[in-house]
Image 1: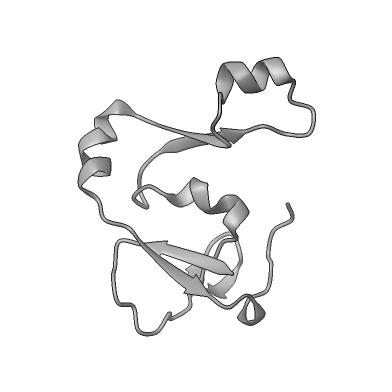
Image 2: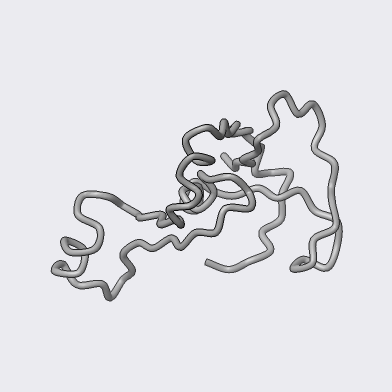
Amino acid sequence: MLFHLSEESGIGRFEPRPAEYAGRLVVWAIDAHRLHNYLVPRECPRVTYYAGRETTSADVERFLGSSPAVVAVESGWLERLRSCRLYCHHMLPETFECTDAR
């Protein structure tokens, strides 16, 4: 399953839009592995981190605790985060082409 997060509910049809990074019209969809990166409003500056293959157990305990990932945002965005409603649209993976490598 792929996902598209938006502040818009009830999107009946996803129309491709220009994407600077892709160099063509696209509809953005993400996999479950990257979902946590987008659980904030679109314009919200954030830093997301999680353990990698070489992360030590001590660093996992110190920086992640029991969380699989941490999304850090500026404190000035706190009220916007609290009041924002995000909608998670489910997309069929067969209709997408991966444009970035993991």
